[in-house]
Length: 81
Image 1 (cartoon, helix red, strand yellow):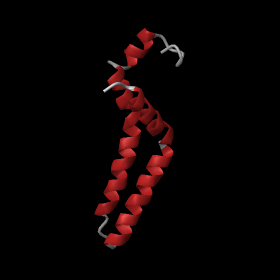
Image 2 (cartoon, rainbow, N blue to C red):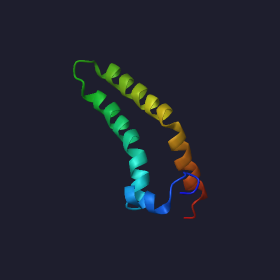
Image 3 (cartoon, helix red, strand yellow):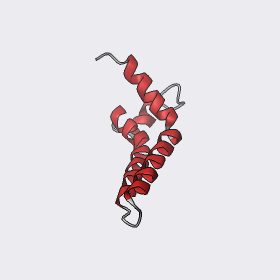
């Protein structure tokens, strides 16, 4: 909380716990990922184009959220099992 410039009480006013804060950070990324998956259901397109559109959207999602994904991977690597 110190590095973020907020007090501990302010953090817990907005988030029940650390897991809730992480979930709030991940929500937009998951929403984007699910929207990419929805592209597969577009029956107006041939399957090959649907798959291509979905993969492009997923890659865009990874690119848009790359810093969050990198932070998650780094945190996982430093967290004991």
